[in-house]
Image (tube, rainbow, N blue to C red; front, side, top):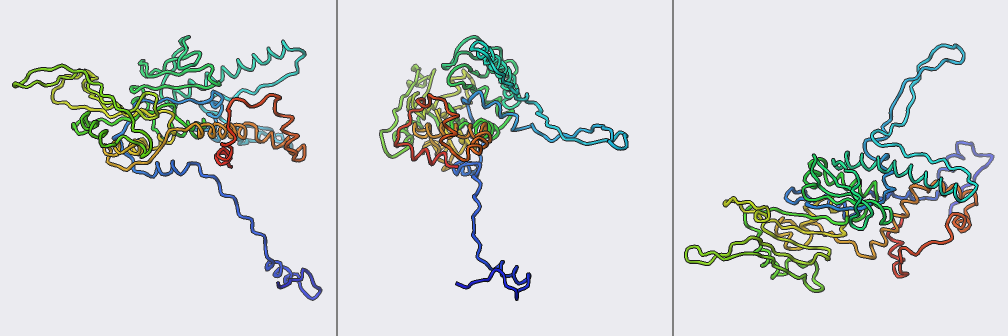
Length: 428
């Protein structure tokens, strides 16, 4: 290897600098920023959009503490300038200064809790009760603003009735009509929203599925939807109940080549009438169902005209509706591609290959729960933990020993065989 002397009396400083530039340098590659969206999400967004598929029901859950992040997303933190007048120190004249100040816009500011020393357990409980009351008031104000600004709904006073396993609930209203529910209290301090078909129509006249995805996934760290219904309306009598039954016989409702096929269940109600010397069925209900209400995918193909009680003879209206439970939140990025990717029957309706999305498996649910907790700790206490770690000269074991409570764990019940998968999910 060729040697380059660092300094010689015969060399000028210019020559020294030239030699220094020729010395081999250690190349440290810059770590790439993690993409905001997953590969599946990017595929859904890149896929062509269609208005043929609509969202007819939506339910989701997020931690109540996530409402603190509303002041960091959407219509907030705009840099505001204000002109103030101050006296110059030397001339004693009034001088105009422009200063920047933080404006939280429509969102209430997160309250600053000032802890104080207590002498006994009663004072500690009193201070804790004050803290809970202060935060509860903040969450209630933020929740009403979020529902109004983002969803376009009003929230009624609490009904004093539990719903979906929660202690209390309120109705969501749009122009005086009830369009869903919001549930609070219990369930690991979460909030549950349930929006009906009428509510979804109003919701997506006010905003778009992409905006809802942004708030749920990017702001509230929601990874799955409790339920989402995707529907297609056919007014040409092409995709009726007879077509659905034939498609079932051909195996078009299977989502995989493995395992048993989903069960079908015709739910028809009819009488016979004699017309032109023939006995014809006169339906009061025409429906063909595939799957079960407890399965991840449940299909209902039914005569919407009969269901709505429409008497117009020249109207044909069939609806094909898929009920998806614990489904990937990325379905909001492109409902049509999600629908077409469910099975060959759905693809035949929307005439598109679609993008395959899935319900959350138990393993993935656990992994994403851990990942969400890691993101929450990093966002809320990452800097403080870094400062404490620096004080103890990088001793992680000693630092975590001081911070963690004596009793930890037990809620997730994660098997050791899932550890590798968890490490992959929470890799940062």
